[in-house]
Image (cartoon, rainbow, N blue to C red; front, side, top):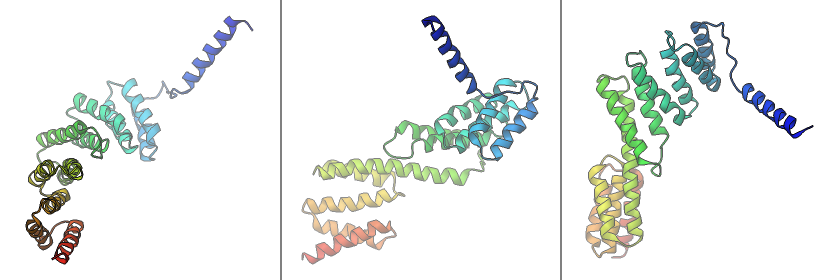
Length: 251
């Protein structure tokens, strides 16, 4: 076989492989039929194929009455598949393109949740969590009586916990490096800005530890006693009890 024929054979093979990966589209199908097929896949929890099917509706029938719902369910398919990075642009496109659709409130919520779930730990890009907060605000502006009120409140608590933990960990690093003044600044910030989180209680406890290290044991004891007497995080209360017992045994 000549080099020329070999190259042509390879190109044909690549084209055939590429074409085999594309979904088969029934050009005679109506928008309703294609949408129904996509919904059947979605309800069967076959989200990968459902996403492809909804995408077909959006691309092949953009002016139909099914395009908007198909766009929403395209994002929903990615969301339920936990492919949040793919869900984000689909929900954003839906919100911008179909502002009067029945699923608009759901799309705002799922968009914010997609941002949040794509950055679940303190080590992720903080701008992503900020974006989630911004979308929740837009949702509440557009839907003041939103049905997702309780869910939003809970997620905001989780977001506050992430921010609080991030600042607490910085303070902890300063503490371990024996830079106690810097550590107190961070622990104080957590107590002031995130008082409802467990990291606020931990920051109070660590302030007591700093006082121990800086020859203010009596003040540390006062802090531990306060932690024990108030309804604080159970883990922190136990830590305070342990330190208090240790200090009292040294008297």
